[in-house]
Length: 127
Ligand SMILES: Nc1ccn([C@H]2C[C@H](O)[C@@H](COP(=O)(O)OP(=O)(O)OP(=O)(O)O)O2)c(=O)n1
Image 1 (cartoon, rainbow, N blue to C red):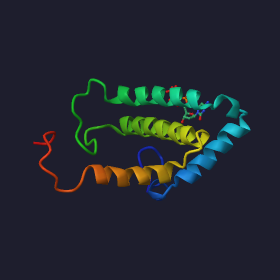
Image 2 (image 1 turned 135 degrees about the horizontal axis):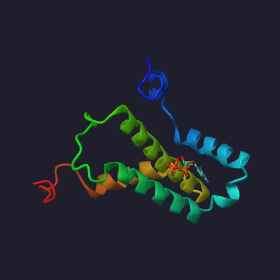
Image 3 (image 1 turned 180 degrees about the horizontal axis):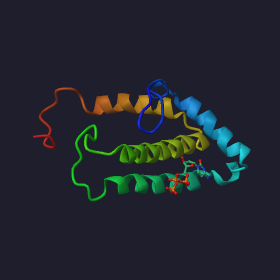
């Protein structure tokens, strides 16, 4: 079944690994001769720029309900693109820094759980 942006549901539900993205991005840059430009600093600046573009989508909209029920297919497609740009630059940044992003993220989740145990005293942020 086709989604509004033309992607099949099967393709949309495929479990994509960070390693696959990393490999695809290395190929993308290599065949264009862009590796020389993909330095940590340049990729960080590109990432921040894309975070800005992502922010613009939400700018001035007020609070937005989870699932974006009132957004048009076009708005959702735009969001998909900007989220992807952020992810793709983040994956590239981690790669050129020699960081295994998937493992690093799993390790950070463990650290987060230790820092914020279940059933602590009521958090002032949520009460
Ligand atoms: N040197 C580059 C340039 C682009 N890209 C990839 C990563 C992003 O997914 C996307 C970014 O492309 P654009 O700079 O054209 O940005 P947008 O797609 O957001 O276009 P626009 O800024 O016109 O909305 O392309 C990349 O890997 N390396």
